[in-house]
Image (cartoon, rainbow, N blue to C red; front, top):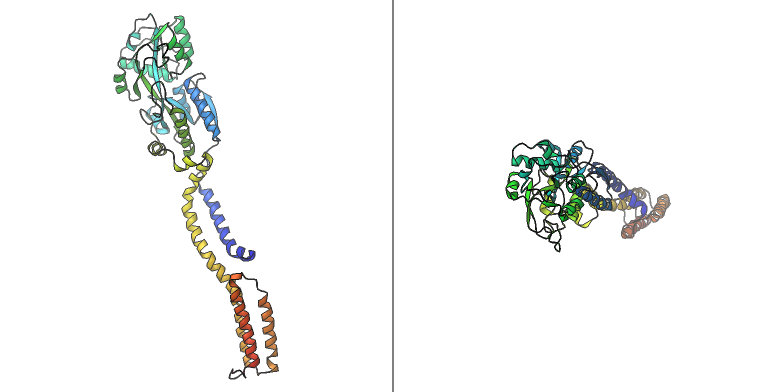
Length: 431
């Protein structure tokens, strides 16, 4: 196809398609942000360690993650509500109805046992026995403190201030070893360094929750778990017997306005991190939607039901996100492109043939002029015009597939020329 014909026919169609594409891009959902803020809890804690893993994996996908140190779950909720962070790990059971209105859960990601360690010589057999003891239940704003107070209410009665001391995790550990307090409560992963140290110490012992099932039934955000004998250290037989405990479900929490692509990427990352087996669960049990106390978005619900989207299974995050945003524009673009593409070949054929057929008007006029003149010298002028017409037609540039039309026109010009030379002007009979 000659270049000038191509652009004359397809150029306007391409221009229309490009205009439609640019318009479609402008109508697409906005691209996800390139950075997010993650409430990471206090340095040295399990939340902070997990947040660092999220940071590393998300940055491999091109999303910069800024970790924000906080006092714990209560602080995380507040910062999410105020829009100071985008993502946080929050202990289950702390969200209020007001939180549920603006925050969303991306699922439970691990069980966070509630540990109570007492001095080895202390007679307590349950949490209720610590009512009049020196008990540390965590800092203000921490999930440990909120859960401890909720469990204290379950055991009823008045709990004095001495049983609600506000010490951080490492401070509680040091005070317990020093004999400055009788017991300390922690809501933490079994992998936390201070939990490991307490489990291996002979100066303290882990208090069992014999009524763990009952507490789990009464507190929707809690589950009953068992620290199996020897699971911490088989050789050292730690613990020396099965220990029933209660555990809150730590959940990945986001603001309801978070970009859907970021939410999907967080879910993919959560599966990579939390599907690993733990002291309390087999592999593949987390993340899930059990024991969460915040609503989930439709996207999260679909994810847990059907897994990652087709695009996320086969494409990197950036490509999958673009295609996911762009696919909704395919229908209007195809609707526009289909008739344009179908119309292009007929338009092209019409334009090329028109370059040929337009000369037939001149040919018919010259034939009529020649027939109106007497045979002989009077027709010489018309014959010369036919010769010039033949030359002009010979200069036409048409595709090879239309050469037969061109030569048909040239043969018709020659036919008229011979007709005028040999025919009678009145009867048209060749002499």
